[in-house]
Image: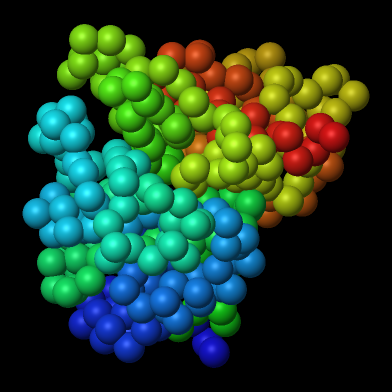
Length: 317
């Protein structure tokens, strides 16, 4: 099939209702969506992405009211965080109800619920009778897409339609949280930082981003978010001046040769928005290596360092 790109909301709605796949814009990254109540459609997500079925998907809703039938429990503390941050880049891992297929949860008893803020997607979710199951719209393990063209570059002829909502506002996947011993824990760093969550709680959430027994939710596998060009954390050497690309948070006059700057002001928020786009651009340069300056390990810097460490892990073994 030839993949089309456009802004036709009715076409996207019709395709989803017929069990087809549509790439959807979110405020984080582009997703690959299917009707969550149609198992054949959900199966086609795994096929299009070459994604293992053991890796769970996230359900997307317009409102909490729509989501409640799909969970057996939505804790009070999650209602508090929903009120503070949603719609927005936060995913809640909760016990699933019988409405949720184990195909979506990787055979587990929990499911991720998310309430995206992207206006075009909100309109689509309000029109649908079912939630959307959607991981990122990329080939499994590769770079997440933050524009419709990024999606087309990886999934052309694998899906019928990409709903183009423009560049993603945040540029990093959602933060994923759950409960452990009645306290909020972070399973994946994202746009809602640990510091932001701590302001709503009377404690800083524990970080549990490494899988211990199976993959509880998206983004926990060791090798992920990877470029095609070998990627390393740190700075290139003088011998690599022309053969390697250096990516830095802000301007650095000591860098010579190919160099991409994520934020002229050195701002983490701007850098996060541009990170994946810069990595896509870096891959297109077809140089020998990519080096990325590690970010300050606070706020969004933690999320970006997490993504880069998983990308670099592919090339360090």
